[in-house]
Length: 492
Ligand SMILES: Nc1ncnc2c1ncn2[C@@H]1O[C@H](COP(=O)(O)OP(=O)(O)OP(=O)(O)O)[C@@H](O)[C@H]1O
Ligand SMILES: [Mg+2]
Image 1 (cartoon, helix red, strand yellow):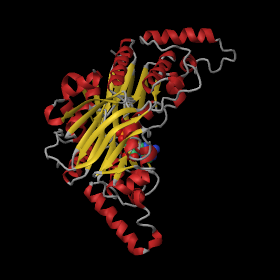
Image 2 (image 1 turned 180 degrees about the vertical axis):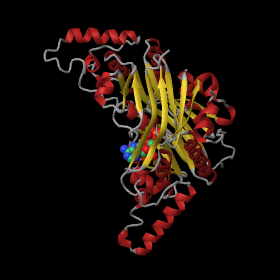
Image 3 (image 1 turned 90 degrees about the vertical axis):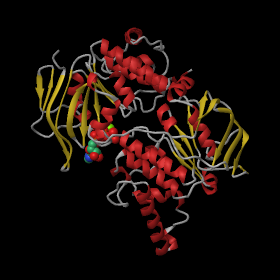
């Protein structure tokens, strides 16, 4: 079959730095083509060239259905049938499902016929076997349903190629399953799909072909028959990466205890015990109350009832300041939003959890002490930085994630909570973060790791608590279980 889109010799430099070097790529109707590679290898840049957001350097050719272009604009790209599902989904929460799906089609029509709009929107949703009502306000839908609406909008606009750049980052197991089955339906309609995700199992499940990039260079294109998860990881990183469970034991000294913690509509009767050096993985479906529970331990979301004990003493945190003072750190799920100040220097970010201690007013001595600490943490966590004074925004995803961990290590925590620490992080950087978890545990830090990924929970814990609808569903010792069993418990 003729490709729908072919890219030849695509280069893109940003101020002399080559994000893409001589890239070739093609995709056929009804094909799922995965663009894979480590953080910063150029995946999103390539996608932006296809969607007309970036223009390639001169010399490259973009061919769509036998028409050649030297570059595209967003309008031209859409006219040619290319649609991007952005991570923020670009929906209007205050409009209905039908209005969102039909918004661009009805854009210039002064007189909107709402009945007609609803009928056409429903037809698209029916074709995706979705039962979402077209009259519902988008603000009332879950992330996963919103994503489906964004896909439906692309179909309504006659998409021939739909691009999904890390579409599963904020979805859980079941939602991911839905998305993947929707991708299969798009395939059946003859729509081509470019799919980017750092969750290699996902891309293995649905991709027909893989194009692999490394440091902006083209490594190759491979058929799914010739690909395994292991090989994909190897081609992306040049290393043989595999994950293993934690081998070191923990002590029997109890550090943190939660007794009967409850909060209306969030979590109920939560009992947890965390020993010194123990890593507890908390998993379960998104919206199961995991993050709310962690925030409550961190003093940001007080429970309605129940007690928390730290090293045997009851604590009642009024704010996260109290929790930090007591030795609890929290690496937030949303590191770009609340965890780090991206435009500020790496050093300031690392010190931000304890500025009180190193205030410049305290003089030069304190400053050099602070810098020493920054240096030590950068080394300990193996963070790749040009200089600690560079902005965090100059770092790759995996290194930025380490800065957010360094920030909390600076307070020498007794308990460190890592909420979804590897979302959007490539396999090599994941492995680095897993090593940090293991190292911290052997140093005697107790950790709570919140994660959606079964393998991640299994390979980074001594014990696992599965939460469902705010309640503990099961507590398991990691050494007594398997990823297969865990998956059954989570999805049951
Ligand atoms: N607008 C820009 N200006 C300067 N440099 C940029 C710009 N956009 C991307 N880059 C650089 O180009 C490289 C490729 O970035 P890109 O976002 O394409 O990576 P990616 O493969 O999507 O990574 P990730 O998996 O982390 O999303 C990176 O080094 C990035 O810093
Ligand atoms: Mg990207």
